[in-house]
Image 1 (tube, helix red, strand yellow):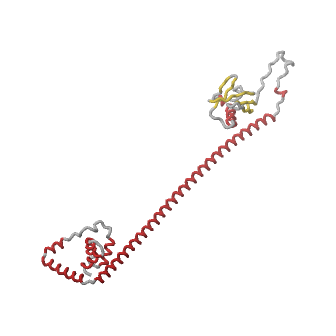
Image 2 (cartoon, rainbow, N blue to C red):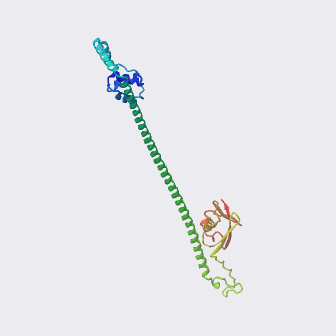
Image 3 (tube, rainbow, N blue to C red):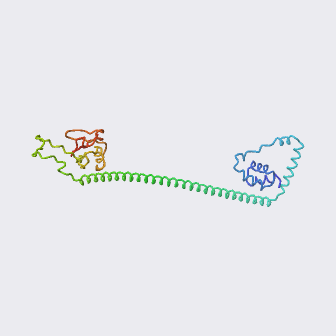
Length: 294
């Protein structure tokens, strides 16, 4: 099929002259099917409808009379061949071209459909991967929070155990001390002074009674809410033992730092007094201490 017949067939099928000329020129006049394929592939080009720019060689050919005459003869020959096509052949070619157009459009639609399906699959895969990553991060955060809570509970349990052990040791030590003090009976004749009515044979002057030494003392501590704590301590124990006893046995625990003092005579015990024994502070054999906020 000549170039003119292919060009005319494309124009008769509804393509613009510029598109038909570009398709025939780009395919090297290899036939209507090749031109149709080129048009289907380049139908979205921005310059598809722009006129074809002739080459300089074509301009030179137009200036040469001999070449122009030869070209005119070839065009006349092609036109003669084109005009020799019957209406039936043109209709058959047009039908074939329409079938090719429909086939190309169907192939393009199927290709675009496959691309859309593949893009949707890729989008879903990415969404599933992101969802799995978020779920994994949430699980890790939950595990970390659970581990932190477990550690906090363990530390609280250990702290309570230490307090219980300290209280138990303190109670056991005091019970041992009280038991030891009560298990050793004190001989009244050895510790009690001679009666005042029986003077010593060697001296007519009556000796003053000796001061009794107390090994224990009873301490009562009045808290801020009016309740009281009572406990027996050794006379040689430091005042810090009384403060520790108050801290451990205060219902609900102390709200803050506090001082210990006596009402009569009024005396506020300092940190230095905490290191002194109860006997030296004048709290033996019994005393009442009052708790006051610092």
